[in-house]
Length: 327
Image 1 (cartoon, rainbow, N blue to C red):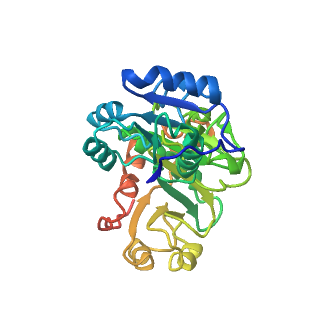
Image 2: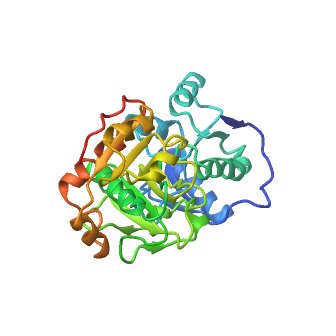
Image 3: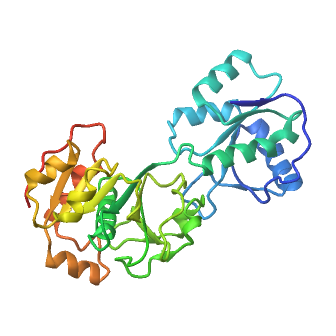
């Protein structure tokens, strides 16, 4: 936890027009707002990550921190604690221990150090500190259905109550998916840029063109990001057909779960042997699935049974592997 007790010069690279949520008591809210907007040129916004201007950082004092702790907020928004010399030391210590702020700043004597603390807090959040879960979905070869599985897992997570984001490339499997550069998936406002998936309020998708995402999403509004990474070596979920490519790649892939599409040369028992105890899920080759993809209706247009068979992939990776089942 960063602390400061003396004034420091404004950084020459201090962020401009930072949207700041103010979780302050009455004695601070007016003076802090005037200083932020009048001196730093920042913007005080509602403490709402779904609002028109989501905050990048939250400022709280002791009174505001007590209220925040009472709401059990788990939005992973970086929070800085402002303290005054006349605050009760024991209360400040208790609040800091429970809140675990990204930084502590004396107010008003140490306020010139605030821009530096904000740079550090927001920078840490953008590099993945406190970001949601990420699943990397790839194939042992091209054309095995990684994009369809990516979108299906995103839909399943959304139906289960998570805010889920699919990041796809190449053939999207959805129409009019919001385009973003491959290196822009780390943007803190990625959720706002994404396109809602058909029939799902809590699922969205972005398309990174021909290349897979460079990095992982860090937008704190996303509970699960499912990335279609093609044939990349670092995978969480590998998609294959029961064929020679699977026999060659399954023993060497680091993926924790295996999705097998359709029937083929390899039996379920042989697939389980090649998977070496990892979670294995079998899904059927389906004309309805193919039509849903072509019509841009994935995942809402997928058959229920086909989706149900994929649910174990989203289970806790620490749990015991699901038994391999034939389609």
